[in-house]
Image (cartoon, rainbow, N blue to C red; front, side):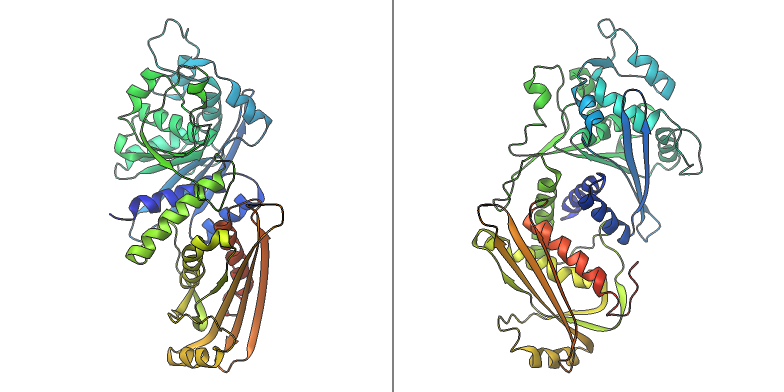
Length: 428
């Protein structure tokens, strides 16, 4: 189905960002929770690694649920040591004790596939060594054992695994372990971002048919090919998608925000060409406002470098209102003289049965001596249909931690959290 892959890639890119622990990632996690995703996170430290993962579930409303397992990339010194522990260890077995025993075999004489020791240490710590704090599915055992049992008992269930960089390596190894525990290939869908290779040729050939793996690689990202360039035995497998960074963001190609930016643009382009998508994974039920909301065409004052982003920015600003509130009507008439148009907008809002009129102005301005950094300001004004001012919000940020398009989403999300009270809905 057209748009299905774009939806999956956008969902997994948002979740991969949210699996980190910085401020921007925690905000992404809060947004996901507001769209109906439930997080169950665990962090388990061993002498070899500090394993971290997030299990996400969402009721899709038709009796089915989405099930997603995400891993963060390198965040601290212990993670960096995991990355550098490139020694190969045997990979095999069908249970947790057998996994541990296989890794202790002599790698020179074994017939088993070989994998990156650091990545395997991280994966075992995160998913397969210590018992989970809670019985997530009413079962006992490690998180990996619970997942394997749940998937085998529900053969129509699909587990989506994802991660960026080190997290992508852990997602791939986890899928391989679950396969060895008896989970069917059709139940294991893996999407990684900028992930390095995890195993040798034997590993690639054994597991390429045991999971559905898509490797998203940004043009110029050195990490995805780092191990091969170092002359190791590790090779990639799966379906490779090569993405190209947008010219408005000259960031380090390996950053997760760069991957998310591309996923957003691909998804928006499908929306613009085909109309709104029924995207159950990243959308929630709108909040009931105490009156109709009439959203006018946004005024965008873009820096010349961001002119090509105008359509995507307008898609973000306008679409977010209908996805958050109901009833909500979008005005299709573009009028750059927004202040002078207010009386006519109020009349149009009345005809649409709305109580509120929304006007937004977005301004982007390049920061001096920083070619690809911008000050972004989003001003939101709310009137009643008599033209009386009810509320005004002004939010600003820079594109120092994210791309300009992501900065617009960030500001819109913060603004709407503040405006919930204006429309008589609770900020949950």
